Each structure stands twice: as C-alpha cells, then as structure tokens.
Length: 79
Image (cartoon, rainbow, N blue to C red; front, side, top):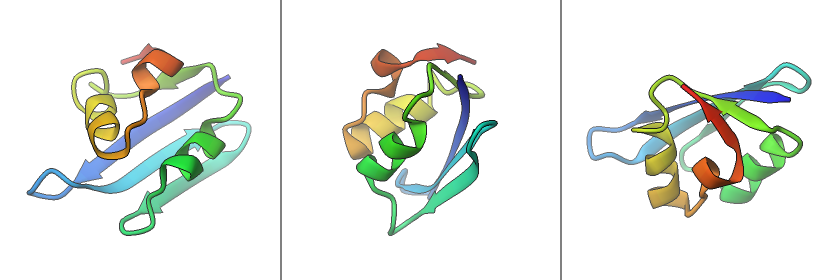
C-alpha cells in the first residue's frame, strides 16, 4: 500500500501543511495549527511505502525535526 506525501513550510521553516493521498483512503490535509503527529500516523496506518518529491532530503527530515516522526525509518520511501 502506498501513501503520497508532501509538505509546505513557512519562510521560517515551520510546517504549515501536510498533505497525504492514499488511494485506499482518499486525501487529507493537516493545516497548522492543527497538525498532530498522531493524526499523521493514523492516516498512514497500513501504508508500506511513502512516495514524495525530494522528500528524503526535505519533507521527511523536516517532519522528523518538527514532530519527532521518523517516517524515513518507519516506511519504505520512493522519491
């Protein structure tokens, strides 16, 4: 099962939007200030692979820094 993930950040580097598309569960956006680590993990539950655009260098490290989620080690990744 795949999940497609993308984030948007503000000029100061804070995550403002986390968007995730799962073919089996549709699409969701988490928007600041209502971005919670548990909600991201709940939506990703059952996914095996996270697909991003340059996410290994940007999205996933930023998510880990801000929310403490180690998605790069918890899921297979494809850029």
